[in-house]
Length: 212
Image (tube, rainbow, N blue to C red; front, top):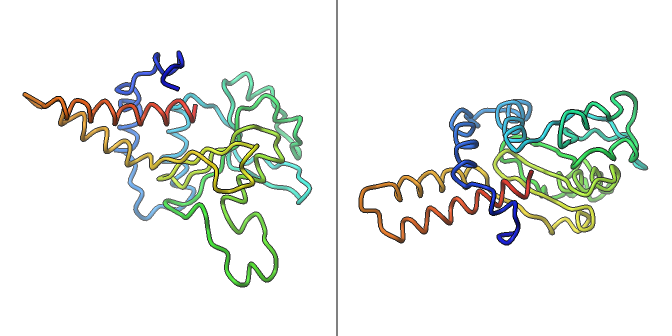
């Protein structure tokens, strides 16, 4: 990625300037899933440049499923997609990715209870099962799964394995970058502090470019 033109064009400080205020405005304590989406997930998706449709019901061999987001590169692509009825794989051809959000810090790899194991696994039992099903049955290459804190990117070719993904703790990345930049901006800051700031901003760039 560092050899890619998009990496060279991206500015870690600009990423921090875009995401830092969003995180400062959001208070996760006591929120429910809808509040996490409205106050944090959707602003981050918009900052990344996505436009999206929410709660699109899609047709699958397991019955109708409703992922939280279908992500598009621009508004013309979004408006060109069918907006009524059960969506099939052909209806997602203009989209970039499928997305699903959970309550703040909810485990994305929820262990199965004995009762769930006895009756058989359902996709709703585990967020990782859900995003795998959404990716496979939508035909889209990418899926984003988040609980607000952790942001996970999965690919259709490996999502079924459940343990192959790229994941970051986004608030931690933002806070680490803010602290490192502040330290590096101090009078007579050491070269070590400057390198720490560069590294922290690079970590944000990885998030920015992978999730765009």
